[in-house]
Image 1 (cartoon, rainbow, N blue to C red):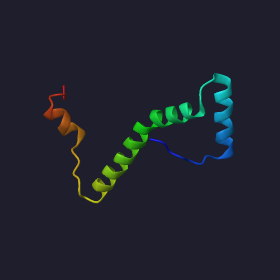
Image 2: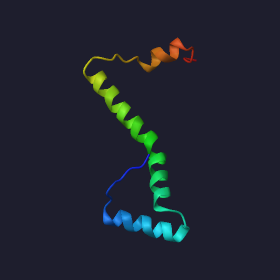
Image 3: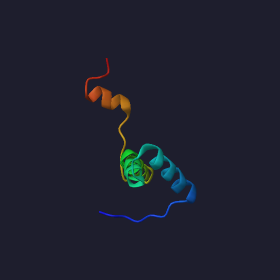
Image 4: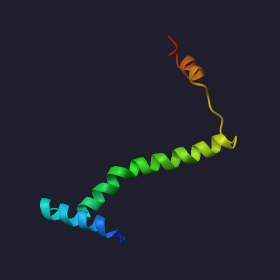
Length: 75
């Protein structure tokens, strides 16, 4: 799939310089940046949603000691 994005000039300049120095395309580095950070972005989004549910009382938490006892890790 193809995407079109606008980047600030300073980012475009950095990509251009990196591309020239390494012989790889700017698209390669944009793709690498997305792949490297997509997991973190997803984790952050899901954690924020879970925290909202906890704070609103829609999700219950389990104390760590209870989890450790349940899985026999309380030695």
